[in-house]
Image 1: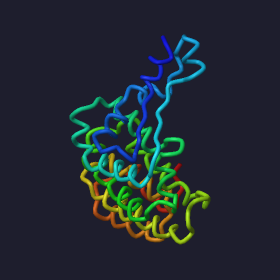
Image 2 (image 1 turned 30 degrees about the vertical axis):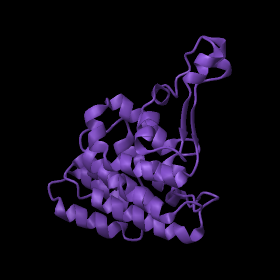
Image 3 (image 1 turned 180 degrees about the vertical axis):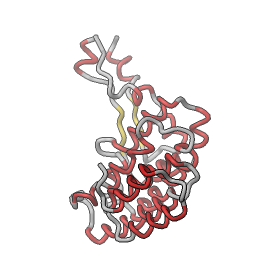
Image 4 (image 1 turned 45 degrees about the vertical axis):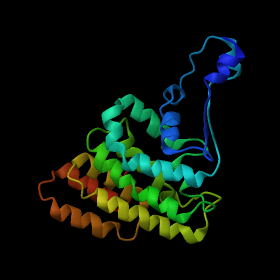
Length: 231
């Protein structure tokens, strides 16, 4: 393969000039699904592994993430579970541009960060209600809320944002807890477990009261999430 051919396989997103359709082409590029694979035989691949590049204002990237979540029902109709898993892995846990990093970056608009967190409700109500999409339905909040479990936050987080972000996540998790899907509810409980919001016990006690049909294991799990005892 020539270097020119190699260059053509690179996946690049220029946020300054990109619209949402451009973002979708980027996030559905084969490089996204193959990102973790290392099965190339040619020396050029070993020297220059295929990559995905993003440049520009990450406030715009947050807006793309928000729309991706809000329109996830359309994605469910178009892409396979494996493809959606790869997309979400890239969005949620990307090295520099993952949502788990961007929401704690106070150099970005608080309103944009708030909006994308709130749109995670749509991800549960429109996509996760159908399938766990790998581990994401249950484990999504590990990356987003775990900082509140150990009290260690990004260097770029303004301490004045700490409680405000926690409240946005709490309100979103409380909404997800009301979705008529036990697996989504368990995902919300897991998130509340990590978030350590002061009103966690009140919300989970209300949840238990409104679900008298839960079995002993479900009750024990919910109660453990009150005290943050679940991993």
